[in-house]
Figure 1 (cartoon, helix red, strand yellow):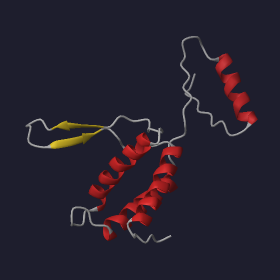
Figure 2 (cartoon, one colour; figure 1 turned 90 degrees about the vertical axis):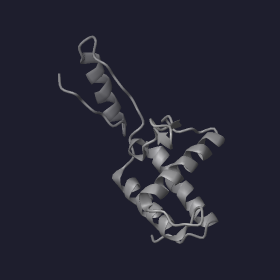
Figure 3 (cartoon, one colour; figure 1 turned 180 degrees about the horizontal axis):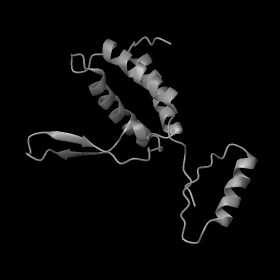
Figure 4 (tube, helix red, strand yellow; figure 1 turned 120 degrees about the horizontal axis):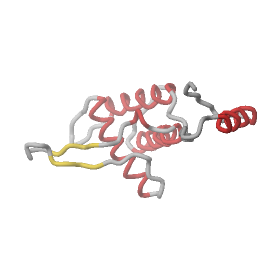
Length: 137
């Protein structure tokens, strides 16, 4: 039996999913999850991060977009924890193998759910507003 994916967008899809499950061989596994972020969300927050990187100085210097992304995602994760809506990934910081640096591990925006990506975009708007960042729409 082939792998089957159902998007539960309407009653017919739900029925099809139930029928498929009822006819699946014993021992098969079923996973129901939030949808992963959409490409349009990814494009949006990367554009916003690029604008922040150009207009916002942290520690009195400019940062490239990838470094700024790491800083912003870390702050976003902390903010979501504070309001009682932690994201579904584990973030931690470890000392480097040689003991000379710290390394952030874990959270990847590529694994954001649709809801997490939407929250991140809203959070970026708020960050931008608080720091006089002008976004191109």
